Amino acid sequence: MPDANTIFLNRSIVDQYNGVIYLVQYNISVPNGPAINSFLRVFVSTTAKPQKNQNPSIASVDLNGSPVPDTIPMPTSDANFRVVSAESSSEAYQDMQRDGSFVTRTEEMLNTWFVSDGEFDYSRTIGSTENLWAPPGSKPADRGVVIMVITRDGRGGAVFQKVEMN
Image: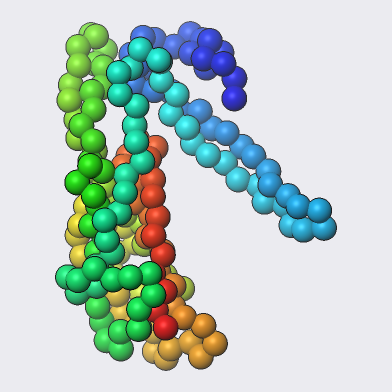
């Protein structure tokens, strides 16, 4: 990544404090294997900012109101899933306004749901909102059903959890 002087060139004090989004593109490859091209969005802010963002954490993924381990039996009927984030996940932070004053905000967790089979009512939920999952017509014979949920804090922090249903 370029140094801070390059990233912050011609940027206002407000941009430097609140953060500049920098896109990092990278390629991963192994000999005789596939190459993967990807990117990562990074927020870069001045070192004068007192508190940097931390990744959120997931306390549990709940099924019908009860926390579940990473592998569970597949429900045979519709079921409610939800993410419970750790209390420390929703950080309070300050944004600098154009006039140099500060406003305090609190992060709101956004969950993105992915599933190999069956369907969720919503692809995204906020906080610990329940998301109804309808199982597939028939259970896959050769593998489990995988649910992946990614929780983002809106400031570049993210965490994921996988639940496999056999």
